[in-house]
Length: 159
Image (cartoon, rainbow, N blue to C red; front, side, top):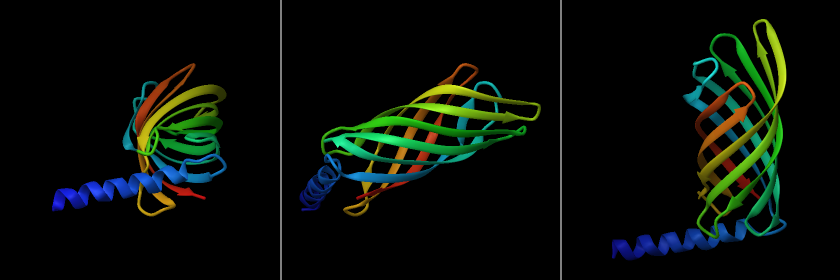
């Protein structure tokens, strides 16, 4: 009986999730990045950051995103990010893949640079209700000087 209830619950979540990834819907996704688990190949220091994505579904399961964020690293290094990207949600299960292009403004103690960066992410949108999700993801950001990978956790609000 427990297995049957579990399967029914997963089916219900899947049906609810599908409705949120339709053309014309939009969403906001604030998240915490790094969680002191990411690693930057240039500074060799862990970091903490915040990020916000917002976007709209252009077609079913495909969203266009605007992105803004900030990251603070040990050793006096700060990063500010503005960018655009996209996410593809696999049909009805909440798993997504994303890619983005960003302007990364790096501020070190004696240097400031603005570079173009590229990023990828993979995650899961776990629906808590019809419109609210928890979205854990792994990410990899690349620009001319460095590569960075890590974990992030966010909330999604689908309208």
